[in-house]
Length: 303
Image 1: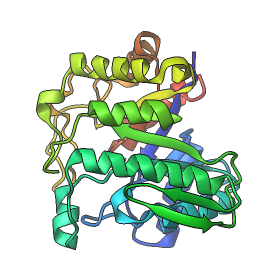
Image 2: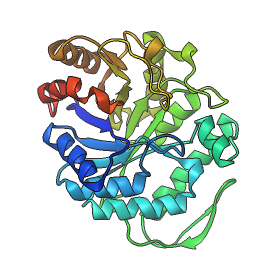
Image 3: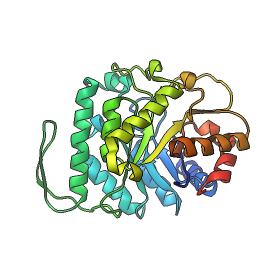
């Protein structure tokens, strides 16, 4: 049985000192990683600078993204940035990657929001490019979306063959891609094709379990090497969603994305999900839930 791993999403701070303090608080509280999102709208730091600063402020804490939006940068650019962060963090980068999906990002920045299938195909090619460049040496690629001609990049990542890759998804195509390529699969609800938010018809415990079966079937023999996880969208009682947040836990009762009760009850729930479904990687989605969730991490971290 895999040990528990805990990460928390942290979006912004008022200064470098405050950001460093937030990173050290996670490290001291037993979290494994600090993750930053990648959106063009809303109160959020840009990921690369934020990860580098958090890594410099800590010694054990891993840094990563939930998740880089592939559509916002060419994978050759991301490969270079990621390798640099991995070197500067002494091999502590967890690279979360997705297609890009939130309509506000695309529309307000004047970007084209292609249909989901196109974005997933483009992401699959981007993963090929990332892994090819991280191997070192000249790399060429001829795909529908990307073409490289003998590109060689330095540095290469400290982690070999590259940083741990986390793919998040809820739709079948994205889950199958994650099953083939990811080290960590972060299970989410399917997103509406128009990028307006999660598809609430895809919510509930039955849908959540079916996603694991999709991953299992697509992964085949490599399923045992995949770390399964999800984002904890709410701790405690109901509350209004932040205006900038697209997370919708309303239909996720009785799944690991919504936790209620005291620390012992929440810890027992997570133990049960690990035993029943193999989930071991949990991401706290809201920084405001840290005080309530820290005691759970203290009980379970590394267990």
